[in-house]
Image (cartoon, rainbow, N blue to C red; front, side):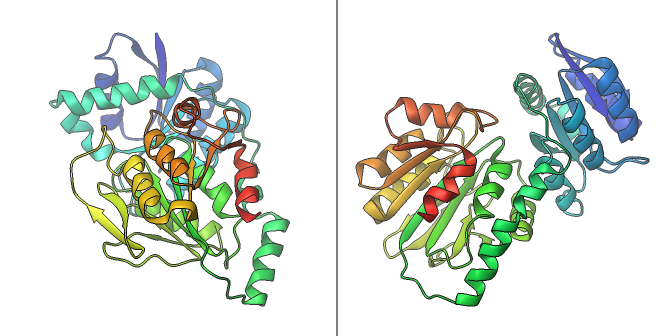
Length: 348
């Protein structure tokens, strides 16, 4: 039996969510809290397997509650928000403190009558509940993202104004745990890092723009949502939009496509990696970060075969070792590195 704690100030949402979750015999809602402070107390008393956490609540909001829980009683947390456009900063602050994922609340009532949507939520809850999370000392990640070394490096490169030759393209794939991993990498890159970076991050629809804005605030490296027919340039990171595949065409042009999901993913890392292999050959680097499933395992193998270099995040620093493990087991990876070492390796 998977024990669920709901932290939500809306009695209606709590009631709907309880009904959805308890429609599955393997899930049991063991408590409902209406404030973050109450949620923190119940997390300690009830030891749930997973917590659903609202963002906006009285007394203590979901961000602070997440920070406290992950520091003192680490538990898998799924963030819920009904206003991702207004609260996107708070969502990714919570993720930086250790929350695993985020979903939009507005679809809950629809889930009561749509089996597919309901089953997807139940499947996500079950999956996240089995992830072994670690303690996050208060603001530890935030401090690392603005470390003195990073600040010194950024300041130094801004002064130098070097015009380095374009080196090539780095393609990155990530899923659950990806935002934290991307932040750890991008924050260490100087503003004149002479590569282009293309990113496929699996995240709930509607949250990609929030992710890009959050990453832009904590990194000196330029980051944006990719646009169709956009020319790739050095010193820039491009993130695939929600619900569109991203490829690279001859001449270094980004192509976005609305073709069907590839192996259930859209955008697909396999599609991006495959195009990088064809266009850039030895000037391509493929990186697979934390995440569930096997997206990217085939495509990154093509990068390796074409002469490019390939890197996978190690098991110890991955929230979920699924995607990196698949690529490693297929012999598609040159180096397996901790998240802290990946940026260092790129800089070398």
